[in-house]
Image: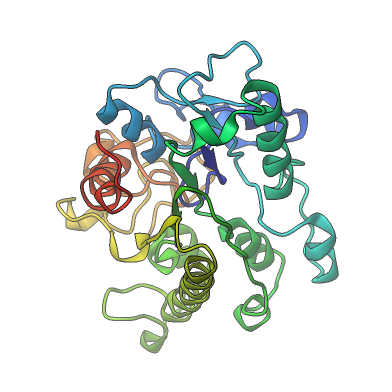
Length: 310
């Protein structure tokens, strides 16, 4: 079972395309997203959430909004661009959110409805052997705020609350200060703005603060629910190695300036010749190659902690 959104655990696999608002505005509805086939995945191919069932010998998770899909092996509730906070909460912070109606609360309602219609009253029998992947959630709350002029100090006051399940992984955020989108927005001639990896230091410090709060919430849940296996996914420190060093901070699909960041999907904006040498696909989302590396790390490292056998 998967909840979240496309940025930056990037687990949405088609719900957005089936929602009128999101499906109309999402760049992921256009080529070269999906490579040769539009699937709603904001990358050039498969995502982390795809590599888990592939490695396990199971079918890919179908999007919940695909009413004709088979959900026997699980379901994906994630939606591209969804936020953790409600529209009302964001409005109070003067942040407009008009990309999708399917926020985290809506996804949880979908889950509740799905379970009631498919396994009730025997859900506990089935769910005790299920893996819940919750997140990464919260990145879009911050991205919308930054695009609309909110400062990092203002965004520090926004929080995300985790929740428990029988087996659950709650990933943190990536070092987004190393992403082409952030590097382009905060581009400056001041060397002090960057860390030793040439990433935006303030942005990454903010992400680390967010991740620390998330880990504290997870620790609290573990104390409250000692019988539940609940682990934190340290995506911040799981950045893949082995890519061409010249392309680490450039987008594969994009054009312009130092980081090749532009709106992928625009007319005339093409993808690079070999996406497998890039970590970043469009400045915000990762490439299939990066997701495959992270998927392998997830399976080899995290699933053993969850007592999952594949």
